[in-house]
Length: 76
Image (cartoon, helix red, strand yellow):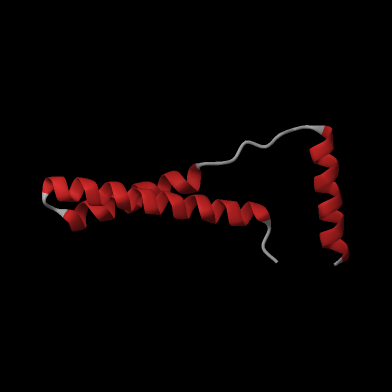
C-alpha cells in the first residue's frame, strides 16, 4: 500500500504540472507560441511541484501516532 507521503508528493507534482500548463497556455496565447510555452510551463510546474514539501510538525502526540502507524504496517 502506498504511504501518504508518496501520495502527497505525487499530488503536489500533479498540481504543479496543471498550474504550469495553465500558465503556459496563457503565456502562449499572449505570445502566439502555445506549444513552446505549454512545454516550458509544464517543465517549470513539474520542477516546482516536486520540490515543494509539506512542513512536518514535531510534537509528541504526532510522533506517538506515527509510531503506532509504523508498528501497524510492520505487523500487517
